[in-house]
Image (cartoon, rainbow, N blue to C red; front, side, top):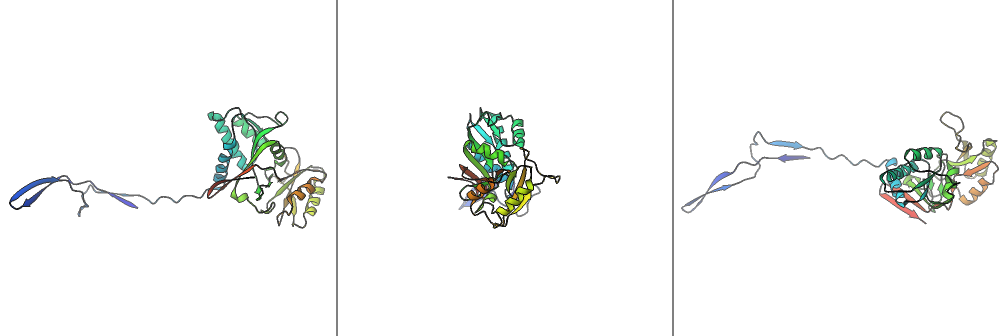
Length: 287
């Protein structure tokens, strides 16, 4: 798109004749000259750049900012773990630093969340000293239509479940890629935390338990190829389903019945609200 800017010509005298009377008037004219003077300038402007689509991190941050609106001064908060929860912790730290929030106590669900919160100056505690929390905010790996969740791909499922079960309200923050029609339906990992002792024995039992769902059970490995070790010094067996779990409640009970299983990543009937960020904005689903 181009725009043109012109300097107006100086006032000119014009003779107006009417019958035998001659009038001389001075007028100011504004027009596009046929022969542009040397001082004529052309200003060219490039077309505005197209709006860039929001990245997944952008969506997570939008949802996280909305979730922090649930936080009030004086609360004891459960601080989740993972990439989305990290945006929540960062925002809480920012509001504390500005004075918009006061007297907040955070109960972290992992060592890395504890480290982040401490660096931001968020006062911290543990369930032993604060067994009842006002609110917990965390991300999720899957959310079904009933607001049941799969969590724990970040490796903190045991502490997350303990803290979030102790909270009066549990707000979940996700982008719309985490919505599924049935838990396990994404084809990504549903984690089970197991003791190190005879982990392979439990891996085989878990795989057999979900044989009809085409389950593939794998020991989670760290980047160095060694078994991933949780904050609680346990291993994680990741379950990959070809089809969604038919009955998540029954599945959770059967997994928990295995000796050596510490916790599973099915978070059922725990959610107060889910904040979902998508290309059309942020929405809230609650029970």
